[in-house]
Length: 252
Image (cartoon, rainbow, N blue to C red; front, top):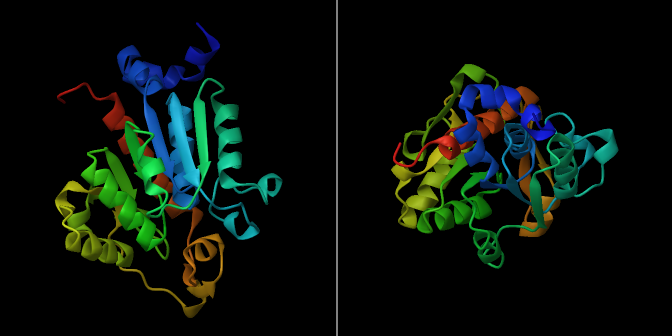
């Protein structure tokens, strides 16, 4: 048995050779390599996906360490895409990793879509680029899953996978629904990970900051308290759904 087959032996035992072959011949794009996107990347890397396209514009900062798997003392100051690429290749040297350091907006969305991935995980946490990406993926019939808000949540049993039209108690999803509906996007065709938990939080959980996203978008934004456990479950749920979709036979 080759080293690469042995590397993914337990997955192959469960999924079978045909499904593993589909994974190894799939291209998955992850947009946003923060708390959710990083764990989605971890799950996909360890599943044996053959080609990954990783998009983010930010660098690893000390404040990321509490919840982002790519954030380590050894990666501080690195582009998140560089830290991600190194981690993927350490897990699976056979994986083809393509990175782009860019902020998703009207000027860059064409470059994102040009990759024509088999599946996309939207792990963007800023409203404008998130809505733009979802709208364009939907218009171009590119399969994807979107992560809604994981911040301020603590109850893992409330995390669900479902249609955007059915999300509850998620402020981010509420804003996304409103914008996409106005743009004519069918909300029941958008699949996402969200939490139905009604969050309550102390004043200390909400601060204003100027980070990379603010610089790129030209505005200040709120920074929200979050737990590594919840964001990890969001990311791994997204990765799991991607794996399920990619390993299905046509017509299933």
